[in-house]
Amino acid sequence: MCHLFESIRVYNGQVRNLRYHQERIQRAFDSKGKKCHLNLIEIRQKLDIPETGLHKLRISYAIENGLKVVTINPYKSKSITSLKLTELTSETYTHKFEDRKFINQYVADNDTCDDVLFYRNEKILDTSYCNIAFYDGKNWLTPKVPLLQGTMRTKLIDQEKIKPKDIYLKDLQNFKKARLFNAMILWSDEMDMTIKHITK
Image 1 (cartoon, rainbow, N blue to C red):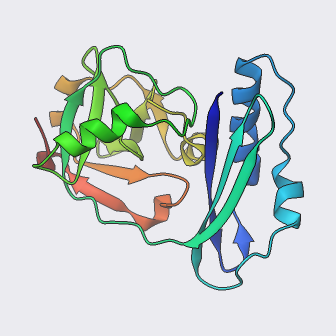
Image 2: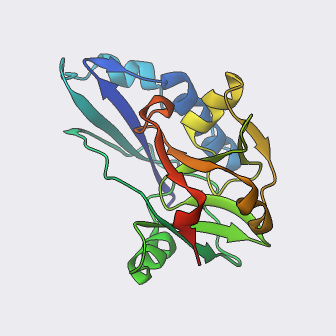
């Protein structure tokens, strides 16, 4: 059975970016040739949403039988100031699967940095739970083919705040800094680091 999940930002009673999360759920169903039976607006309307503070709304579901589990918990992001470059060969994470064993194992094996930064065929992908963008002094560029198409990544591309481009290992030295972001970590949070803190 194919189990997936969505992590959705809830801040001061507002559930953010439902459109982008719904689109990603739709892609997951489409990939299996199944009709999408999850409607996030309907799910949200049935929930008791906290009115203050930052929370994570997590919706777990199965494409095959419609199973879903919904939780809402307080959220605080951890600080990421260093990344270890980690090569992937055949592993993929095209949809937001609950099975993250290979990702978690790479993180567990890393004892030198705060998180890992995956690459394949010399091209940068993602960290273990964030998309990434690099600043060249003029533009913010994000890997054209990420490990996972994040909802915040899609929104930032739509807003033309970041541009997709193949980014090779050899290109890293040309950037001034990198920024991490995901559904829970806003672009405006500026979770930045210098390139020298991305190491092998």
